[in-house]
Amino acid sequence: MKIVRIPLSDDYLKQLQVLVEPKENLRQHGFATKPLTDEELLLKRRCLGCGKSLSQLKGRQRPNVAPATEAPAVKDAGAYSAPAPAATPQVPKSAKPAPAPQFKCKFHPGEVSYKYWTCCNQHCTADPCSGAHFHDPQDEPLSDLSERYQLHCTPIVIGRHGPQDVRAAVALDCEMGTAENGDSELIKITAIDYFTGEILLDNIVEPDVQLRHLNTRYSGVTWAHMRAAQRNRTALKGTEGARSALWKFVDDQTVVIGHGVSSDLRALKWIHEQVVDSMVIETKIKKQKEDKEKQAKMELDAKAKAEGNYVEPEKVIEVAVPGQKKKRKGGDLSLKGLADTRLGRKIQLGDGKTGHDSLEDAVAARDLVHWHIVNAGTE
Ligand SMILES: [Zn+2]
Ligand SMILES: [Zn+2]
Image 1 (tube, helix red, strand yellow):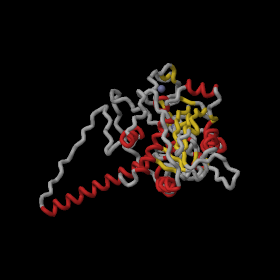
Image 2 (cartoon, rainbow, N blue to C red; image 1 turned 60 degrees about the vertical axis):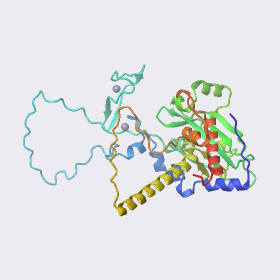
Image 3 (tube, rainbow, N blue to C red; image 1 turned 45 degrees about the horizontal axis):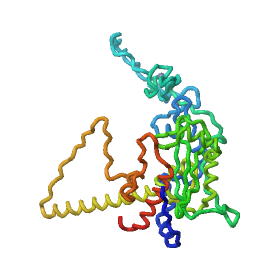
Image 4 (cartoon, rainbow, N blue to C red; image 1 turned 90 degrees about the vertical axis):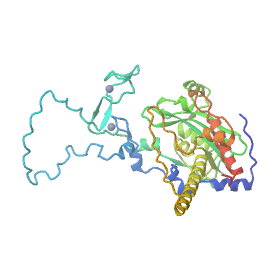
């Protein structure tokens, strides 16, 4: 892959700074800005039954977790006696079978063996066959949760004792696998110097926990890659190893560039405030375009109405075709689509099985940001 050098200048850095996401918008774009509180860490615990995390379950309407007391108090019990219900007529035996009990926590109590559940002999993708009336969160100490999930700010280095090789801007792309418990888990990190194009890191990350799969279709990482990296000792040790490898080139002032880079930062459990996200840039442009079009349409309609020749537009009724995904309106914000339209570059050309190449993706995100600097104001 050819990586074209971008000359570093004060002027260019100023233009790059213009694209840096303002601090107050970071949260809105999915970036973490603060370490997790104890309460947030506790929400990372998962139910031993269904495997969902408490934060996933939190949004539901009904209380999900078993009450602390053995039996929930009956509201107003005994305050007054309600009239005895009239005797309900006996349901004939031939009536519908009783509905299956409604479980809050649904799961298969068995295991998957040769793609089938041992509990119900259904295929491994089948809906849960059983469940429990309450979720049962695992009992994990806060210290373990913190070690596993806590987010870390870029170290602020004062004076000359910091890393010697800090870069002004770095383009980043990470790949993730899926842990046994369903967590997304860092498995590869790629970082290049934004200006020189030098490849700073392009390493497999040996995960901190047991993995269910490597998402090879998307990540492009196979078990053979993983084993080879372990053998050659090029694998970084977990998210901490990946962060410290990256922090040799990055301090709190380094601009980090990526496409949807909040997910890369999340995978690294990293809080960094100097970011340029090509997806955020493109989303804003798209929204501005749409607003402009809407405004123009409204003005046109108003004019037509004033002149008395306004025609009510025909209502378009969309018919959903089963099995066919609804086309998303208003252009493609994927890195693949944008690399094609902006840069005329075809990326992610795998057959859908080989996945992405994080180096190719990091370079594309960087070149996309460069495109926006060179073509500032044309969009
Ligand atoms: Zn089952
Ligand atoms: Zn559950």
